[in-house]
Every structure is written in structure tokens, then in C-alpha cells.
Length: 318
View (cartoon, rainbow, N blue to C red):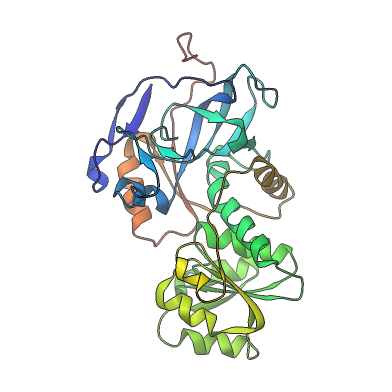
């Protein structure tokens, strides 16, 4: 099969497009013919070697954890999916090697849910990791209908999901973003505030008594500042900075969860959450997609797509 892979750590230039062995299908997995795969900041961190202390790495590595596609073969023990089912998944394993930037991926059923009918394959590929992160963090924060929630980097992939889900819970949402993304946040229903010097004062002007919860995606000084913006009994969670624990908050690391992903799919079909796709590039241009992702100026998601033949080839991997 065709795939993107890298055999050493480095910049986008280490990503190579070419032939890789067809994936082997375990009994609890399904073989997915990939339609689209989303790029996430963690893909860049992995390629640069920053996950080396946390995960075993087997080179060459096919990057990518987000995927949407069509089941072409279920594993021997699989009853949840059948040939032809359209699925999406956060296909993360406990090691780096077999990713989703490929024509086929063998995906454990615990990482998958059915693709929402309302979403395109490109949009569905952008939902799993960002959506699960937002959903699991907001659950950890125990968001209530009368809460005021501060979401950092609210126009990004995770942030925009957090905004939509928090609003669906009935909360008021203040979102940090650059000026160019303020209209986008207002359209989602959030109250935007500008990054940079004076951010704390701008948030206090909107929430003089403090915010009830902070969803941190930045860390560092922003995290420390956020702790000082909390109302009494306010809650703090971060997905990037473990120091949040010392500040009395929660560190949340997203995990694949088929049930949570199913709930997100239902919310997408109900129109509660949508996925903004900022750029779509072919699989061959995955290096450019990761370069754009690393710049952190994206509104929503960057997605790569795989050339699609609706009829699987006779020699499709088994």
C-alpha cells in the first residue's frame, strides 16, 4: 500500500511517501480503507521525538491517529462492524509505528465509531482526537449549565470542539483567540478575547467574579494566569502542562473510547457540533500538512485525503 512514513526523527523533510507493507489484521480489529486522516499537533511532536520517553517507537513510523474510511474486512472476533460500514476513529496504540496516513489501517474496534451521516469524510476525520479531548476534559471539569467557562485557543481543533460542547451543556463560554478568529467564535456562540498582554484584565472585565472552569491548551504562564482567574471553587484542567496538578487542577490525556466517540457522532448528526476543515491536501503532501499544523495558526483542522476507488482492488490486504 501507499503510505507516509519516517525512519528517523526530524522536521517535515523526514516524511516519505511510498510503499509500505499491507497491515496485518488482528481478531479485534477491522481493516479500514482510508478516505481521510487529520493532522494534529501531537503528530508533529511524535515526528520530532518528543514522545520517545512515553511510547515505544518502531521505525519506520506511519504517522497519524485520526481517520475516516470504509471497512473492507472485519477481524475474526468483530461483530460491531461489517464490510461497507463507514467509520471514524482515534486509532492510537501504546506504541508508534502503525498510523493512519496510509491507504489502509488495521483499527482496533475500541478506537472506532460509525461516521456521522451529516459529516463528510474530511470532516469526520477531524472529529475523533479533538472531539474526544474536548469531551473528556469537559467531563472532568464537571461543566454545569450556569458555569462560565474559559477556553484557551478556542478557534483551534480542540478549542472549537470545547466551545461547542460547553455551550451545548448550557454554559457561557469565553474563548481566547487572535482577532482574525473572533467572528468565527462569535458565530459558534462564544465571547472572544484577544491573546497577549492584558488578557487577564480582558477576561476579568467579562467575568468580574471569576470563571467557574478553565480549559487550558497552552500551559506555562497562561496556565498560571488562568488559575488566578478562577472563582471560588473554580476548576482547572490542562491537556499540555502537568503543573496544573500543583495548581489544584486536573491533567487530562485523551484516550480512545468507542462509546464517547459514538456520542460525539450523534451530536454531529444532531447539528450540535461541527468540524471546520481549514485545509485539505492529498496524502502525498503530508509534509506540508504537518508544516502548516506546526505553525499553530490554523482555524479548525488540516486533513489529508487518500485517492479513492469505491471498489476495493482484488489484491486488497487481508
